Length: 101
Length: 487
Image (cartoon, rainbow over all chains, first blue to last red; front, top):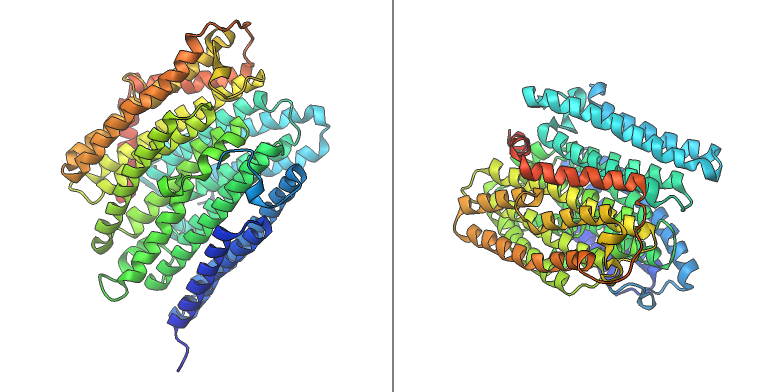
């Protein structure tokens, strides 16, 4: 059995689902950040697989941009996380209830 | 070619200048940075107005080698005007509202960078550029939401960040599926290359659903709205003004570009239009009904902003009908413009109140008409306009959406009727604020309004009344902006 583009898409969807599940079920904000990374990288697998399947470079360029944006997003997210920890002394989002959810 | 990107270049240079000059200034002198950003925004606004003038005659400004990535039509210019206007009002108000805060350089620089992202999102016709621009605008606002770094703002920012990052995951995944199906990231090429109703149809629908969900979070449409009340409530009021009036509108411009240009193949159009119709109905009803129960003005404004996003979503449903597409989209554009001014203004009025440590609970606004007469007057104008009272801007744009849905007839008429019912419901919670401001017998002392905030409020209130009384120019501008999207 050879590996086709559908296998890559299947893998990407699996990773994306794991990320989405992790994001929705996690209490710890650090784990949420990890889940977000997983979702963005699932899209990268898709983009690179399609790019090699179609023989066009657009997808790889897109993936490079996504990686850079994911890094920026993680940077800002961790900064917010630190500020949150300084205020609440916890990163468990279930315990942080200053505002009504 | 480069002179067409001059407004963006100006904003980028000023954003970098602000953050670098910030390092050389003492804390007391940093107010200068606000005036510097204001100058940058005024220059960019003047340049975009010049572009608007030439775009009116030639419809499309040639973007040269960049024309695969950006399209400088009247539609893009219309949105750039909206974003710059909101940024201008918010920065003007922030000069007073953040006077006692630290980190002014970061604040103004992030606001300019976010505006830059929005301006690019307005012009982009390529999935990569749309994604990068939307993220530039969003990531800057994640940090802005945490401004002041107290318990409330950090919690608001964390919720906003988690939801924002989740939605970008959804968006980029949906975009990757579209790229795989069409082999291109340019929206015009996607439109021609997408397969019809075949065996790959469900993958296509999956991509569309991911995009709708991702942008649904950004516009706070109803199943995806939970973050908005908390974030608008927790963030500093000028930042809330910016989020509700500008960031949300950027999601609409990206949605319009992607769905109207890229995904309006006959096989898909009916399906996503129906989905948007359902979203619109649920969004406006739930937003307005929940707003009735809110005792906090910022939360009330957040829910009203959810409801108003529902009104704009109606026009996506109308695209599948027989109604004139430029009328439908033009109605949506006008409502985006008027809502940006009145909602931005309303949050700035809350900022003006909090300048004197007046909270944002309803009771805190008791007798505000005596205490801060100008702020209360401007707030009244914004609230009446949000409710859709004639001779205010909100009435004109709501009426236009209603006209478009009547022209479509059938099921779409139902959306129009729902819009009217919701407007009537919303009058109750808007009027309640006005009642607290003018008809309450709490003893208060007259205070002097902060001058620049008052100026921002006056400009916004003037625009709301002016569009309401002389709507012709604005209606025709939004109609020609809409038709340039289709040409």
